[in-house]
Image (cartoon, rainbow, N blue to C red; front, side):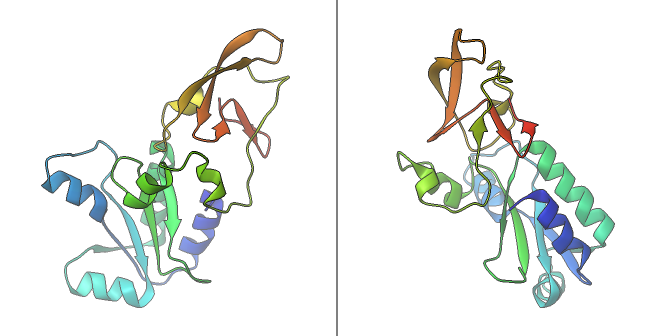
Length: 174
């Protein structure tokens, strides 16, 4: 889910609760903590009332929820909304703790297992293989040799089935 879509969903909510990521909490409990932000899971509506009433999270306003969303964006977390027309929650997942993302890393071409309306492409005239993409993203990448826009052989990195040095809707991601 694009962060802009998440902003729209959050902005329409009347009741929001934030809670700790259960996946990161579980990894902490078994001695495998990660450094990504922990209090990032957002629940809306009746689910939010349930979470708050049972001490599973704390109530927040739209402004704080948007700040938490921005913190997740800066950390490179992957947004996973509830599978509904009007999602009741948005999780912000990392590749080291989230079992859904971990399972998506196992196929040779994981992009065939998921759907997105966004497609990455290399802009050969702009790409200098700076490898910025491989830094903050939690999904992981691997090295793959290739050519830069000037025809010179350079390192190019692959996101398990996708090439880095990407331009998505006019924004360079490395």
